Image (spheres, helix red, strand yellow):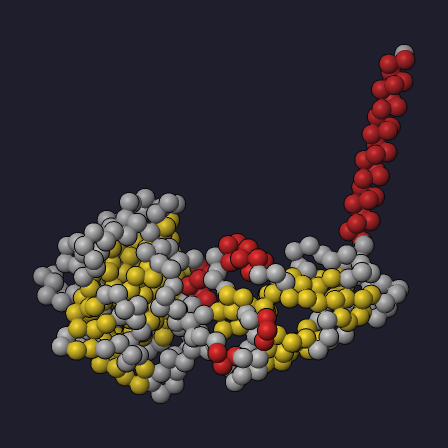
Amino acid sequence: MMNKHIFNYLILGGMALLMGACNDSESDLLEPKVYFESKEYNLPMEDVNDMLTFSLTSRLSTKTSSEVDVSYAIADPSVVEEYNAKYGTAYEMFDVSHVKLSSTTSSIPSGELYADDVAMELSGLETLKEGKSYVVPVQVQSTSVPALPGTDIAFFLLSKPIKITKVGAFNYDWISIKFPVGTFFSSFTYEALIYVTSFGNNNTIMGTEGIMIFRIGDAPGVNKNYLEAAGTQKYNVTKPLQTNRWYHVALTYDQPTGKTGIYVNGEKWAGSDWGIDGFDPNADVGFNIGMLPGFQWGTRPLSGKMSEIRVWSVARTENQLKQNMLGVDPESEGLSLYYKLDGSETQESGVIKDATGRINGTTSGISIETLDAPIAIN
């Protein structure tokens, strides 16, 4: 009988503790907290010269009957490193000496949700490099209420607008690449801006035919305007491209996971599992861009225009592709080959030099065309 009473007391005590914990949890959820409404803010820089000013504000999760103080500070650079590692981005910390807050403090009036605006001014924007993206991490705190973890830091993202007005015209034109002897890509990325004026049965973007090629169409069996990756295995997207429209296209392969993907304008359109060790880009007929010169089964030209042609020895993430469609830093880690095709590469006696300065290509002589308006990816 005694043991039964003790057991009942234990049950009642446990229920009381559980109810207390639930009440504490509910109370914690209902407690007002300060936070930023968004984790990321993309700052417009289209018509900005050297200075940009915008309003900084935070908010409460629930209204309070008394005024709430808030304070702002530039977060430690380590949060940028954590952000890049988590999301596969490559943002650089913006120079904090060029960040000015009209005030480091503000307040949220009683019965209101939003803090009074604070002006944040960024200067020195003319010194930003094209192809690089920058971030200003701002942290909000309060002595009145706790901050909401995970949303107490906002990342203000900015990059210098890249305006591409000159591109390479391809009409039975090509670039052939001879990589250094011993080159072997385990993981890799192909990417380019393309504009097709007409689709043939097989339109070469770039790669090593029969080994690892990125192209459009492969009659018979695949529509002429469908992107395709072909090598020891083959797959294609299920949505068509259109003529006379700019696209950013990419093919990636991550050897450790065996995952490959085809991306259009930063969005994944198709994927597959390959499970290959990698490939030698110099194998078979070698690595070619735009056409396969002298190929016995047809030269397979791409008719149209191309720009920002890049080959990487790493698998770029979806965020990295989306973040850098119009340009990258030529010194980026893992960038093996980079033809901007904006007229900046030197072409002499059938040789063209890439933007990384590492590899010369053999070319039929790509002509550079000036566009009526800068490239826009929609």
